[in-house]
Amino acid sequence: MYKMLAVVFNDEKSADEGVRALTDLNTDGSIDVFAAAVLQKDAHGWVATKKVESGFPIQTLAGTAMGSLIGLLGGLAGLAVGSAAGVMAGLLGDMYTANIDEQFLTEVSTALTPGKWAVIAEVDEDRVTPVDTRMEALGGVVHRTVRSAFEHEQWSQAAADARTELDQLKAEEVDARADRKERLQAQIARLTKRVDAKLDRAKARSRQAAEEFQAKVTALQKRVDQERGDRKAALEARLAKLRSDFQSRHPA
Image (cartoon, rainbow, N blue to C red; front, side, top):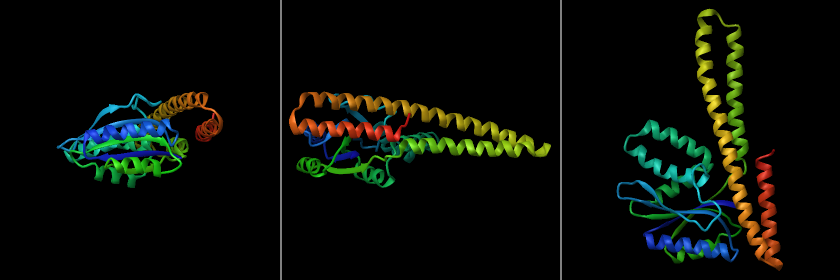
């Protein structure tokens, strides 16, 4: 099951050990780790990405769900100091891309108090015990949420809803009186820009999702090629599931 993990630690050393624990669990096949990053919240409440781990398939976070989650965690501090308009616009885009539930975000942002560190990771995890046991031994508190299987549908529906609204305005404008027609035309112009922006974001996210998928496939296939017997069969099943899930969410 595809999940987003956020493990909160008291110090940098523990966070680094948390990353090593994820690496070990990935190596022994307990979980599949697709991306991981280490964050710190400073004394002023700002969240900074200290490192993006290079040993996992996804190493560039820009435009990814993990990158958006980090943006949301950092953006909350921005709202607190008054950059509300610009930060809120960014947060809305991050919320859309991250596609995570608000309760998870609230839990992580509350736990990640100034001075603490966190390891954020995107994983495929069938059992919670392997991660929980390792992280609890290091003093880490694990927060997790399931990645939604309806991301593609949500993006498509948002664009479809905007187009429907635009069509309604255009139909109303045809029969409107002259004094009303000008106002409707102004609304149509504004909404057209919004529709174009939504479509651009949907296309960009679709490209990003395809790149993430290919990176995950490549990493899993490499592990399949290195294994034998039952372990190889288990990895082949995971790879087939990954392909099936992607195709169901992102039909051609």
